[in-house]
Image 1 (cartoon, rainbow over the protein chains, first blue to last red):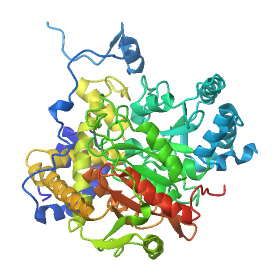
Image 2: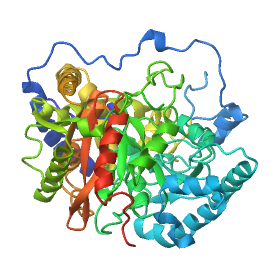
Image 3: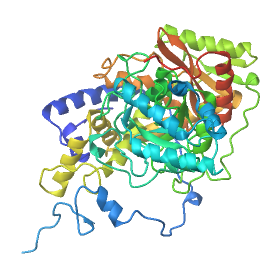
Amino acid sequence: MAEGFDIDHLAKLARLSLTAAEKALYSSQLNQILGHFQALAEADLPSTIDDARIVNEAALRSDEPGPVLGAEAVTRIAPASRDGQISVPRVVDDES
Amino acid sequence: MADALHTLSAAELGRRIAAGTLTSRALCEAFIVRYKTINDKVGAFTHLDEADVLAQADASDARRKAGQGRGPLEGIPVAIKDNIAVKGQPLTCSSKMLASLISPYDSHVAERLRAAGAILYGRLNMDEFAMGSSTENSAIRKTFNPWDLARIPGGSSGGSAAALAAGLVPLSLGSDTGGSIRQPASHCGVVGLKPTYGLISRFGLVAFASSLDQIGPMARSIEDCELLLNALASADARDMTCFGPSDRALTPAGDAKKLRIGIPKGFLGKGVAPEVAAAVNAAIEFYRSQGCAISEVELPSADLAVPTYYVVATAEASSNLGRYDGVRYGHRSATAGTPVEMMTASRSEGFGPEVKRRILLGTFVLSAGYADAYYVRALRARAKIRAEYLAALAGVDVLLTPTVPTPAFKVGEKASDPLQLYLEDIFTIPANLAGLPAISVPCGKSGHLPVGFHLVGAPLSEAKLLAAGRLFEAAHGYAHQQAAL
């Protein structure tokens, strides 16, 4: 079941940067863990999934504005902010 | 007298406060003194704001004097696992990622505790983002088992259990995704209850695996555990998986001496330490002697529980932890670069090894080409496990097993073998997969180390679990036990 395991691809998908030592360690540990998951591949399972936690639409609350934290509380916990807004690295280059 | 306050139950402390023979300030001051002398040995707490605690205590005393006491928890300190939001207090999840985060809001359970007059008392250590079974994955500090400081307290709610066993607080909150309340409760000789999925709101609980996570009460006795459960359980529209007001009534406890107790076939065999098996068998014989009907039940898919759990939990975790990108809150890397480079660096610096391992595993089981083989099959296995548990519980009231196969292991003993650590939760995981209530009750010792048994019941059967625990507790000496420190 674990064929095609590619630690570089996984790290990219997970937005994690791993050292060579971490790649070797996690590859080995994940292969071991996935080997333990083999029981799932071999089991005789029902065709349906557990839907006990699929949310009933009746449980959804009405789509109306409620209390919010507000800009002051939100920017206070942000890593960086300016003029009441969260600042981030530049996403779009200036047009030239 | 003040020295002995830490040995009393929350219920007794509440009675003294209500009677006016004890003030919340005197109680909190006594616990703060104890915190200062013992916490460094045990490492249960990561934070305690003394001034805030005493201000809450004074407000509580003023309420009581004005005849406005709010009930049995008025003035009683309740310590809180560091993944449950309390406004104005740290919310670190024992992670570098959230090391400087102060919660801007209260969780539903924090609101409930305030409404009950309780004192929100400090932050408890845990495995980072609740991922672990030993509290060794905390990025903040180590927590040690009060019964043997060379051993782990269990996890991920290790701080919650150790604080109780060390007499640092009378009540605590934990969270349980695969056993994180019950396993440390067993290792530390205290009571820990994971409620039915949906009984307690998850609003303000930092998400690990949302379909499995539940907040629950921890205490040194069944009575105290029930007191805390009653304060926490209420409807909350902010968690749409939380039961509404009309569908949350608990099944009546009935006569505990007439309980039908199922023993899952094979659960007391391979892998269970002889002392653990002996203590659990003695508990079974006790219930038989009280008139309970004991029978063996079949749970044929039990072996699938651990792989199913680690697929479902890591899949959900990899999604839930996607929010930690260094943008809105949490750690942001000082490394300059593009937004994606900033996010990648922030996550790589902020998360510890076990969290990275689980994110990678969860990313894999959800990735294109593998999701059907792993995630979808795990959901099908989960349906099978749930169906088998519900079928078994149609014929008996509760299922009884050990909580953990072995007593607390030594610090560092399993740190390099994640799979061995995952197997710690073999008896507790099915209740999360099936959404069922479960409790760990202290039932003996292996040498000097506590052992607990585990009861699982049908949805909303918490009163039956507590009644069964109370029957055992009343005939044995394990309620209110504390380690000598």
